Length: 123
Image (cartoon, rainbow, N blue to C red):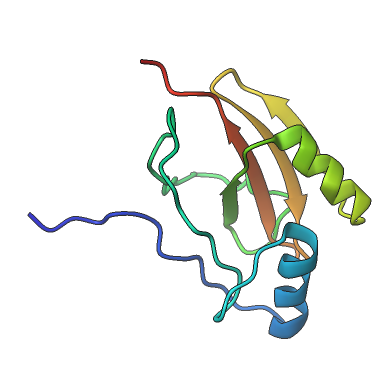
Protein backbone atom coordinates (compact mmCIF):
# COMPACT_ATOMS: atom_id res chain seq x y z
CA UNK A 1 0.00 0.00 0.00
CA UNK A 2 1.29 3.49 -0.80
CA UNK A 3 2.09 5.68 2.21
CA UNK A 4 3.77 8.90 3.22
CA UNK A 5 7.32 8.16 4.36
CA UNK A 6 8.52 11.38 6.02
CA UNK A 7 8.73 15.13 5.97
CA UNK A 8 9.72 16.42 2.55
CA UNK A 9 10.07 20.07 3.49
CA UNK A 10 8.59 23.19 4.99
CA UNK A 11 7.69 25.99 2.60
CA UNK A 12 6.73 29.56 3.44
CA UNK A 13 6.97 33.07 2.04
CA UNK A 14 9.59 35.50 3.40
CA UNK A 15 10.48 39.08 2.54
CA UNK A 16 14.13 38.38 1.61
CA UNK A 17 14.73 34.71 0.67
CA UNK A 18 18.50 35.11 0.23
CA UNK A 19 18.95 36.75 3.66
CA UNK A 20 16.84 34.01 5.26
CA UNK A 21 18.83 31.27 3.50
CA UNK A 22 22.06 32.91 4.68
CA UNK A 23 20.75 33.00 8.30
CA UNK A 24 19.87 29.29 8.22
CA UNK A 25 23.32 28.49 6.78
CA UNK A 26 25.34 30.74 9.13
CA UNK A 27 23.34 30.33 12.35
CA UNK A 28 21.95 26.78 12.11
CA UNK A 29 24.51 25.21 9.77
CA UNK A 30 21.82 24.13 7.27
CA UNK A 31 22.51 24.48 3.56
CA UNK A 32 21.70 22.75 0.29
CA UNK A 33 21.27 23.32 -3.42
CA UNK A 34 17.66 24.47 -3.02
CA UNK A 35 17.79 25.90 0.50
CA UNK A 36 18.38 24.51 4.01
CA UNK A 37 18.43 20.72 3.75
CA UNK A 38 18.15 18.07 6.47
CA UNK A 39 19.65 14.65 5.80
CA UNK A 40 17.80 11.94 7.76
CA UNK A 41 19.43 8.95 9.39
CA UNK A 42 18.14 6.16 11.57
CA UNK A 43 20.31 6.06 14.68
CA UNK A 44 19.84 3.42 17.42
CA UNK A 45 17.02 4.50 19.72
CA UNK A 46 15.79 7.04 17.17
CA UNK A 47 12.12 7.83 16.67
CA UNK A 48 11.93 7.68 12.87
CA UNK A 49 9.03 10.04 12.34
CA UNK A 50 8.05 13.68 12.04
CA UNK A 51 4.81 15.08 13.41
CA UNK A 52 2.16 17.21 11.80
CA UNK A 53 0.41 18.79 14.78
CA UNK A 54 -2.73 20.91 14.84
CA UNK A 55 -3.59 23.49 17.49
CA UNK A 56 -6.94 25.21 18.15
CA UNK A 57 -5.07 28.30 19.38
CA UNK A 58 -1.73 29.67 18.36
CA UNK A 59 -0.32 30.12 21.89
CA UNK A 60 2.28 27.40 21.25
CA UNK A 61 3.39 29.16 18.07
CA UNK A 62 3.71 32.63 19.66
CA UNK A 63 5.72 34.79 19.49
CA UNK A 64 6.27 33.43 15.99
CA UNK A 65 4.47 34.81 12.97
CA UNK A 66 2.40 33.01 10.37
CA UNK A 67 0.50 30.48 12.46
CA UNK A 68 3.09 27.69 12.18
CA UNK A 69 6.38 26.52 13.67
CA UNK A 70 9.28 24.41 12.44
CA UNK A 71 10.59 21.62 14.71
CA UNK A 72 14.23 20.65 14.15
CA UNK A 73 15.78 17.63 15.82
CA UNK A 74 19.22 18.13 17.42
CA UNK A 75 21.63 15.61 18.95
CA UNK A 76 22.89 17.84 21.80
CA UNK A 77 20.51 20.64 22.77
CA UNK A 78 22.80 22.23 25.36
CA UNK A 79 25.73 22.27 22.95
CA UNK A 80 23.62 23.55 20.05
CA UNK A 81 22.02 26.35 22.06
CA UNK A 82 25.49 27.39 23.29
CA UNK A 83 26.61 27.54 19.65
CA UNK A 84 23.55 29.60 18.71
CA UNK A 85 24.25 32.06 21.54
CA UNK A 86 27.83 32.44 20.25
CA UNK A 87 26.32 33.24 16.84
CA UNK A 88 24.06 35.91 18.32
CA UNK A 89 20.78 33.95 18.30
CA UNK A 90 18.43 34.62 21.24
CA UNK A 91 17.07 31.52 22.99
CA UNK A 92 13.44 32.36 23.83
CA UNK A 93 12.90 29.55 26.34
CA UNK A 94 13.80 25.93 27.06
CA UNK A 95 12.17 22.95 28.77
CA UNK A 96 12.80 19.31 29.66
CA UNK A 97 9.58 17.36 29.17
CA UNK A 98 10.93 13.91 30.07
CA UNK A 99 10.51 12.56 26.52
CA UNK A 100 12.82 15.24 25.19
CA UNK A 101 14.55 18.55 25.78
CA UNK A 102 13.34 21.63 23.90
CA UNK A 103 14.46 25.18 23.14
CA UNK A 104 12.82 27.85 20.99
CA UNK A 105 14.24 30.55 18.73
CA UNK A 106 12.96 32.86 15.99
CA UNK A 107 14.41 33.03 12.49
CA UNK A 108 15.04 36.48 10.96
CA UNK A 109 11.48 36.56 9.56
CA UNK A 110 9.87 35.85 12.95
CA UNK A 111 9.13 32.16 12.28
CA UNK A 112 9.34 30.17 15.52
CA UNK A 113 11.75 27.23 15.48
CA UNK A 114 11.52 24.50 18.09
CA UNK A 115 14.74 22.58 18.71
CA UNK A 116 14.21 19.06 20.06
CA UNK A 117 16.69 16.60 21.55
CA UNK A 118 14.82 13.33 21.87
CA UNK A 119 15.25 10.92 24.72
CA UNK A 120 16.19 7.46 23.54
CA UNK A 121 13.07 5.48 22.70
CA UNK A 122 12.30 2.75 25.28
CA UNK A 123 13.01 -0.86 24.31
